[in-house]
Image 1 (cartoon, one colour):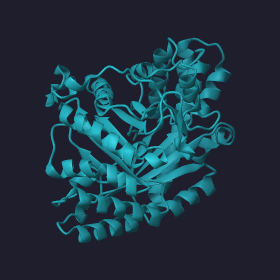
Image 2: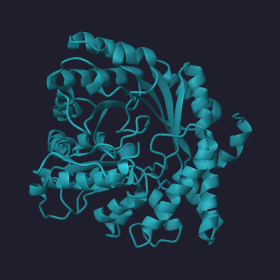
Image 3: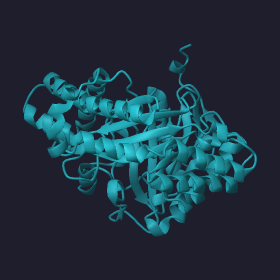
Length: 452
């Protein structure tokens, strides 16, 4: 039973250490909006979203005011649009994207996710048409986020989808080149995508979910960093215990907000995602947590071990605080959204290869990484394939959100503003993998996928 006394000790966390609810996300099923007339379908989608979530933003503001807990984003996720029945062309899908964007504007939410396709084992016509429409859809909208799941441990890796996504990312970057190629910041490629993820750009409403649901994402790198500092030079068991206790308190805040939001909106409570999601703000960095453990700089030797300890302790503490933990739940390491990661890249301590190694032990993957604008589609495919392989082999979620910034090279940076921050252009290996990518087909599932 949640009691307000459970979170009184978190007041200082909120005031001094950047503790916040990163997002309240309402998931909405659009299966009942299906049809072959695209005009009718768009009207149904707009009506369903705006009717279901009309009180989402007001309730979020009420909870902020009454509980004194900042709720940074109010968002909506919808059924993967490629699964909403009907014979749609790429142009039809762009019309749906515009409808989603219009609904988001009406509601006053930050982002809407679910412009998505699941193609880990192959393409339907609709999934292929949606993917082909992504560059234009993300160019003509402001709040729509897109994701494509190209692999799973059970299915293996759809390398045809990987090859297609390399070209889609390049086209998206080109079409949004006048705005720092920002379209790519709203597009993520997944392996083992979670279907209850409240965080963008990968959020969508899963196929086994109720008609509507409330998911909450909590954050608090600053809180964990302060707790580690107070713990001083302790051994690793004590350090892990300190992080677990802190994660417990953070997750209790999320549980309280989720329970109250669910009650007031009359919508089932889904999950609390207890991820440490950083921001560019001072004191809100996952990299600085790792440095607080004793690393001179994030990216140096020992970084992967420190991150593994952090991720495990966060999950253990959070699971004790809520019976419904889901989503991604762990430490995020996006470059552009983390001041410490940006600093580590700029001084040469953190490379793409080290980031890839770190993704084997944390949440998500290569996230919000800016690369030279002239990077070939084949190299982008190779980066995706490498990262997705980590997820498939380790039965975990991994993802790639790359921004090939047109007109920019190593030594330059891109500036997105707000939570997206800015990112230095990272150096890549220039050797081609084009012939490897051209093989096509599917990389088989690993042997440990046979668990039935």
